[in-house]
Length: 340
Image (cartoon, rainbow, N blue to C red):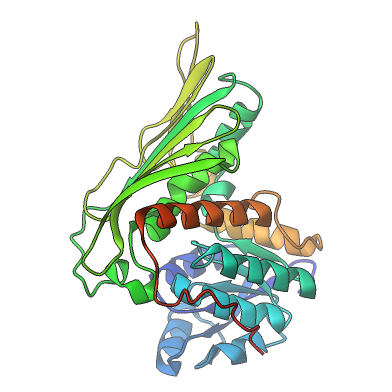
């Protein structure tokens, strides 16, 4: 790493890895130097697509590459613990896709490993880094709508997804909650913190994953969070934050909004829109920029996506799965050994 450039490695070659890399290479202070996949052919194809100098057919080679400052982990979330752990143990900083891990036990292991090695670690919760979401949070924190009374958010895809699809595969941590529900839960906890109680209901597939889930989160402040996710119905992906003196509505795409509307009691509605200079609303450049800012500053976590907040979200996701009866094959209850 130099004062001007942070060198990245990309671990995995799927769709989200491609989208992130496309945004990353547009940043003048980022350099992608290597990519790894379990398939050398896949890694080489990805490297050729993005002009990446090195392609590895195994994860350990990437983790051991000392020319890499930060590794972006974009594997299925069932492999996040192993992949991110491998990189942290080798001395790399890590940006790990959401959901951070399969469960909170694995998340705690990664956080402990990062702190042991003094490495930067962050969940790729790009919503928290989005400029318009940050503006919304600042308004709420400044009391624009008074005390928050409730938060509502939904995220659903119409599908249909066949049983063979990763979203229906228990071996890959399938189901609506971990892939989609992590956004409504994270949005609620961004504004209200960790809930004190969780109630939930779900419709499960024959494979045992949740097709749709609804949860009510209760907070010590007296506020309630209502969150819903689905892989059997396309929702508005809307959100609403209601306070004692007003309300904020995000009509659609709450986790990468182009606008939101502030309603304050006794005043005309105010619309806040995304700044075109911030790039496309689906850009992941902001989380990449935050990682590089923090790494250059010698920070081991981001104030925008703090590790304690990530752990709190994972605890809530675990609680919801416990209430609805979803458990994955890899969850043996035994701690995983640190990769070497």
